[in-house]
Length: 226
Image (cartoon, rainbow, N blue to C red; front, side, top):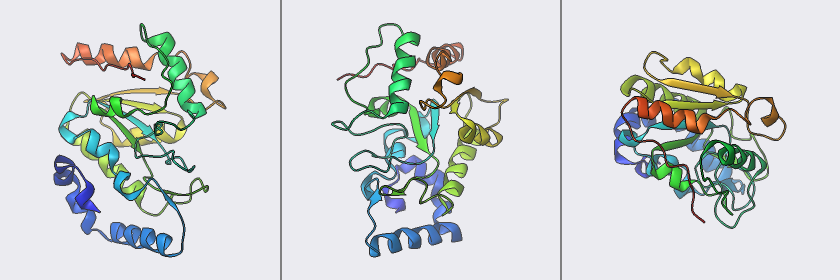
């Protein structure tokens, strides 16, 4: 599995693949497939976030929880779906916020956020796989240990990152982040059940760019082409 990681990430995370929890996780995923379960995303896309956003290119981190569990949706980037798939409700609210926060942002006709990943936005789910049609089915199997390590290593080895933590689950990860070195923006989750409680109107995208520019860094281009 580690051969799917981008090389800079592999240097940072290589030791994780020798640990007992990772061996157990790999065994669990193998058993799931042997038992006939469909797993999302496809194996080649499990580490997609790391491939598109190498360790040395990370500027912003957006945390999700599980991959989408419907056919054709998940491709390894949090909140993102493949082109041709209906835009999920949470992403619709993300686009809605962008349309009021970023000048001339046009809501795209698709939900593929690969362009963000290629520009330095690590779209990280804390659980990297899921059983088809069974949300949460791969939680507690080891992925959270791995992705907690990802967050911790980013916090320890880099400076000036922007972490966008939406919802209580993501906000709990703030304990892993050194706020003397990095910026954390918190808001409600963009889900239709909670977006009105503070996600809509949070202006996290323009705030992120202002903070990057204060640090002498180029802002993120949030625009997405059709």
